[in-house]
Length: 180
Image (tube, rainbow, N blue to C red; front, top):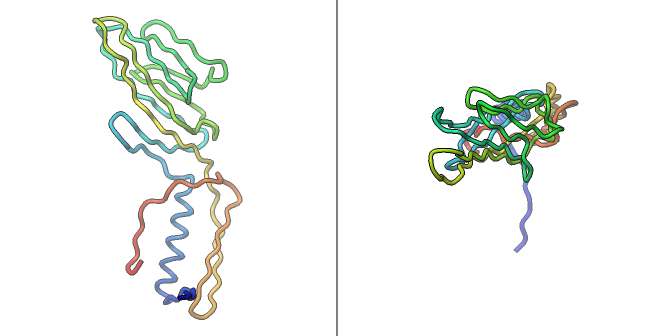
């Protein structure tokens, strides 16, 4: 049995919807941001180059703590609230602490990856460390896209080009069109 591919046939209305959806999806690329809880103690965050990300830390004022922000396998900052912090050299000037949070500022594309906040309680009896994981994806904003269409009878070809932006795109929100 052989199968033969058929050209995509569409009505003008469907063509307009597809063109609109393509435009929306391209604008989502690099412009989507927010936080989604992916599992207990795990968060996924999308940010743009130059923005900041907050890593919240739950602290009790009656105890002493050691807080580590770990990127992949190395510690970016070790913070002893109410005392001092040790910041890895390449992050100096980009890390700040306060209000029960660690902030990574002036994000770079290379900041994308897995972060872990580790909290060690230093007083109040032994308690195992607490961990919270964050997956950060940093994108460069995408310039206004140039969308071209070619309509050859019942066939439609859509092309999109952007002169600026990250190679990878944030997944678009779910868009649904009747019949698709």
